[in-house]
Image (cartoon, rainbow, N blue to C red; front, side, top):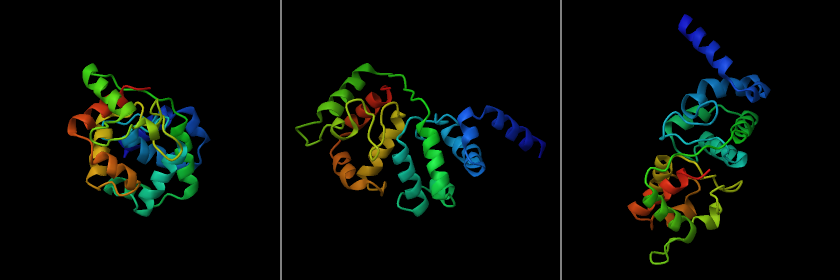
Length: 198
C-alpha cells in the first residue's frame, strides 16, 4: 500500500502544469490510465503505442468515442474508454493536442527517401495516391485525419497493415483501398519517412 501511495505522489508531482486545469476525473484518467501507455506528455512508452502529443483534438476525440462505442476495436482501449463521458474525452483530447510534437531519429536515410517519394507522389504504377493529398505536405493532417509527422514508424506500419486486413474497423473505407496497394517495402519506407518528420 505504501508503494502505491508513493507512486501516486511521484506521479502527481510529475504531472505537467496544464494537467492542473483538468477536472478531477480527467486528471485521474490521465494519470491512472492514459499515461501508462501514452505518457503524461503524449510520448508513448514504446513504439507499439501511438504518440498523442500534438495530435488534432477533434481526431483524438473521435477515436476515443469510437473506442468507447466499439466502432474501433482494441481490447485495451475499449476497456480504458468504456466509462468516459464526452466532457472527459474532450478534456483529454485538448490536453494531448496542446503538447509539443517530437520526431523519431531516421535510421536509414535511403529507406526514408523512398518513403518521401511515395508520401508526396504516390506510385502511379500500382495506383497508390500520394499520402500528402490527404494528410498534408508536412504530415500534419486535419481535424478529421491524423497527424502522421513524428509518429512512431512501427505504429504507422501496424495501422497500415490493419487497414489492409480490415482489422482497423473505423475510418477504413479509403485507407483499406490505399493500404491494400502498398508493398511491404513501401509501407516500411513511408513509416520511416513520417517518423522523422516534425
